[in-house]
Image (cartoon, rainbow, N blue to C red; front, top):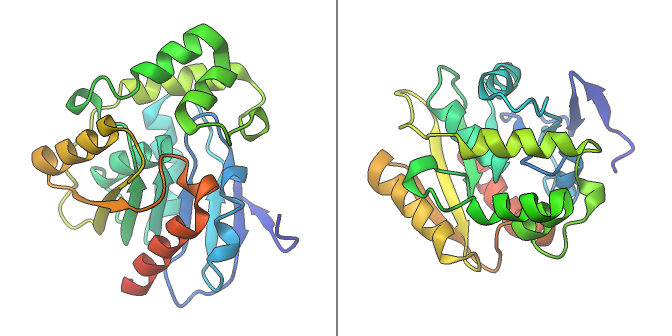
Length: 227
């Protein structure tokens, strides 16, 4: 971890370039802010904040926490973090842009999180994390309290996306080229029903920020260049 990190308002802040919008990294279920440690060094020159969320299991609580952090920023999330990004997109918060990788989409793809819920029911956090993220995920990346994952799973399964509010920055929903078909169908549904722009990231699947950080970092840098 970067020895220059300072801890601010439950954030881990890196970099110091104030000439561009800060990049806010939002983690998903069964992870903490540490899941971004492979991406952050690739974002040299940007102000980057890897946020440690409350993980309350309550959508309104999570959004109240995130709202002041993402105002005027570039929002990046994967999985549950991307789901929260979608919720922010339809809120009153005005961010610069958002890059959201494989969010939950509620009734647009109701089967999307079913395998993860079944894994959690059968084998707890370890089974859940392995099913969602694959073999490179390990228990050290998750919160210490197993109850955190249970309440987060309920929150994300109950989420229903809405169209982005007028005047919000551009929102790009990405899918890994190696992800299962249901992930691509979920993104297509977001585009068809709610008008979100979508794109495929080559050579990766869901756990892009850990397994293929260079792929995600390139997309973040492109978003920052667009401003």
